Amino acid sequence: MPELPEVEVVCRGLEPLLKDKQLNRVRTFRAGLRYPFPDFSILYGAYLEKICRRSKYILMYFLCADHQRRILCWHLGMTGQFHVLDQSIEAGLHEHVRFDFQDGCSLRYRDARRFGYANIFTEDSWLQSKWANVLGPEPLSHDFHVEYLYEACQQRKVAIKVLIMDASMVVGVGNIYASESLFLAGIHPKRLAKNISKKRINQLVISIQEVLHAAIQAGGSSISDFVKVDGKPGYFSHEFKVYGKEGDVCSHCGGIIRRITQSGRSTFYCLQCQR
Ligand SMILES: [Zn+2]
Image 1 (spheres, rainbow, N blue to C red):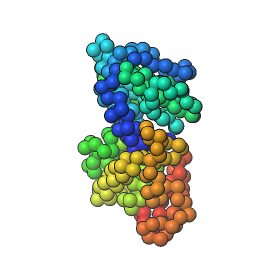
Image 2 (cartoon, helix red, strand yellow):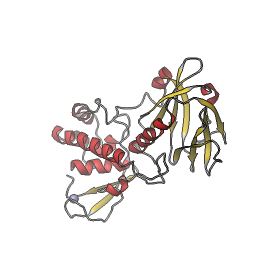
Image 3 (cartoon, helix red, strand yellow):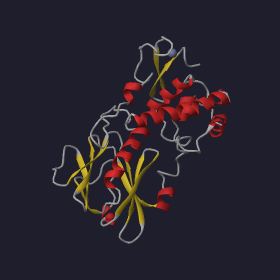
Image 4 (tube, protein in one colour):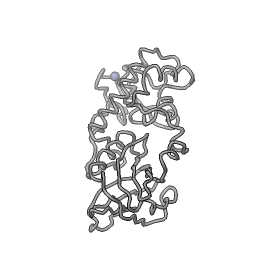
């Protein structure tokens, strides 16, 4: 499943290819994916102003023909991919939607498992939507800092890994990056959040940000067939220290990487490095 770095990589890949282009029409090859598609015709003739990310949502800002700004919000689900191709190229396997732009290019959405979903909002209705109004701060923003996370930890009697994966606490720290961040910070994933010192929480904030920045720089992690807009894989999976490495030797201490299950998800950690 694409996590925050992969979605950020997609946004950064798409924006220079589509910014300021006018959308002509949208063709759908099925009625919907996880949910029915919205009526895309409200975007016909609109100009794409910018593409950014909130949590794991891709937000495409359009200035519409009625002078209203609307946001096409897209979640990639498990296997969603966007590609920009010439309109003359036939629809490929698992292609469900195409957006044809005035200049001859088209944005194609492919999704083998079809868990992706989309909707169209105004700026106000997006902020008030049930998708957006439950989200905690962005981990790479100024709203996510030691004071914030330490305070959040005091109020919850849960393991630290469960807490940092709770999107109402902080968005976008998915299963891979939670394991990697806790390893970097030297914190045992099962440690109760409220029992961790402020100094170590500060290290965790830094580690989460370092891991996410490094993953974005590497083009994300290509597991479950994630590819970038240009069709190439991301390379951060080669930099995993613990994720998916059960039984391997820890690169830091020579101990053995272990796997446990927390809230139904696998957690990977080093017993010697993480206390
Ligand atoms: Zn170790």
